[in-house]
Image (cartoon, rainbow, N blue to C red):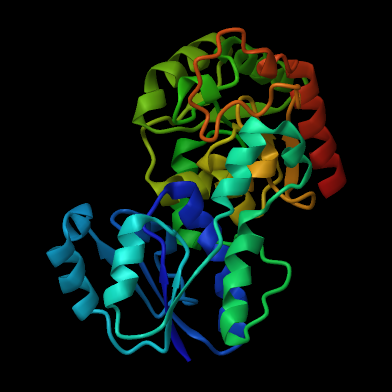
Length: 325
């Protein structure tokens, strides 16, 4: 059986797609992946994939470009839409093979924002992805994100990290309102340092200023804006573990099997992006008003959801390390 997986973006979601790759390969399924450039980098050298097809956003700019793309996607028994947006719906209509779409539970997530009791039932995206394969008789059990880092990548990345043992700290997130306060991240780094554990700060170019400030104040190594996606994965793979906001870095840690503490503010672990208990821990105040936003963009000013002490964050992290030992 040869199949096409369709997931165009974004970084965290793309990493979670890896949760179905090993089970599919074990069942003898040949898999190609269609995604936006540059997300194909995530799967560089991944033998579980026969091919990664990277396209530009312009390939989805109008109906004629979508039709043209569909005409060049042939030779598959089935397609699986793991994105479920209008663009992938349209693409599916023109593909010459059956396409099955995963259930996003979008309505349930929105109900969680409006009616808080719905948050009692936690979703997990890897399970949601795996469910769609039952349509063709494929059962996937215990899905977990998993990516491979090669020795040459690890060797190269060691040039950036002067510590033998360290924790990766990720203070960024797409929306500022989704970020645990910078001052509290500073305290987290200082508390870790007081226990003899050094920190390395990771993030994109948009976190460079914050990374430099935290580095100057704490002595942590700042790698914000200096690494590729696989470079960040390589650094995380060498670490003791990760402390992060609700962002793609959480899923990077999960994919390279490092324990992670994920801090949730206006969003909620029930949305599907929390680590499983065997991968780490999600910290949330679980306030009566939580969650107040589906993606973390909110006008709330009091930020009570981030009244999570740095001591709690560090304690949770150290307990994960002790458990792992």
